[in-house]
Amino acid sequence: MSTLPPLDELLDTLRVVSLPMNTPFRNVTVREAALFEAPGGWVEFSPFLEYETAEASTWLAAALDAGWQTQPEPVRHSVPVNATMPAVPASQVPEVMARYGDLAGLHTVKVKVAALDEALEDDRARLRAVREVVGDDVRIRIDVNGRWSLDEAFAALTQLERFGLEYAEQPVATVEELARLREMLASAAVAVPIAADESIRKAEDPMRVAALGAADLIIVKAQPLGGARRVLDIVRETGLPAVVSSALDTAVGIAFGARVAAALPTLEHACGLGTGAFFDRDVVAGPLVHDFAIAPGWPEVDADALRQLDAGTARTGWWRERIADCYAQLTRDSPDAD
Image 1 (spheres, rainbow, N blue to C red):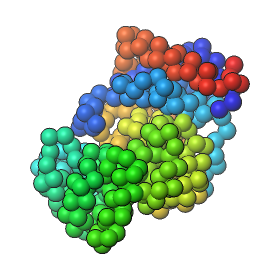
Image 2: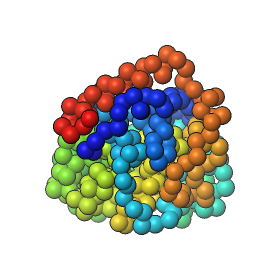
Image 3: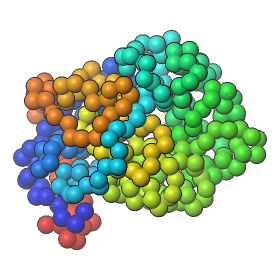
């Protein structure tokens, strides 16, 4: 972005919230996020706590872009949303699915696999349990987070193909491995499409995924990639179908993701914007997702929720310092910044 709003303006409206989770996700049990009230509405800055300034500053750029810059126009009024199944034991699958309420409109479930200290049989059991709950007509996709080796991925997908997978998200760590895995699966007639996630949002050059033929589609996340316009540029330049997913955002970040998804030229798959189901309470009064779809727009943040979820003075101070560091990084990166 060419011009940054003044840092004091950001900090004057800063609210830091701490959202307890009903199910651990990415080993997170409490999600912290910083919220700013921009001219157009609330925006979110919530890089995970372990992220260093260089990476976290891209998330701040996304918040500033969303709140202070003109955004792409939507081309659709509703965005389909998948349910997400964390890497829980198979016995807990019905309980987790119950948190989504009425499943009559369910069309897609993303299932986390390859958790630490788990075996492939645990993944098979979880997928069987999901199929038993949702039936045969619902799409199931899996998310590996790059934890398999190339040989492990080929062996696992050969076995898991029987569940009728919509796609496997980041089954291996590198772009080169993704490309090779696609070749191996095609040679063995294993019909599991490959989606790139970390190879897009954590890569210096996300275009290499397309250049090497490493994926059938890409996963894009608005905060980690720096905002809506950057997401749309990547989708256009790769020429691949895209799925917009959350980064375990609050409702403010989820709404941002929905606005980005609504602006995509085409949308062939449900988006990963249903993770609000894992919070005991969010910063809005009611759910944004209804019948596994979300309307793009700006959420109305609940004042009572902000007070009750307030992270406290010490954590707010920590986030103020982090914001200042990231802002300084963006100022160094943007010669035209004030």
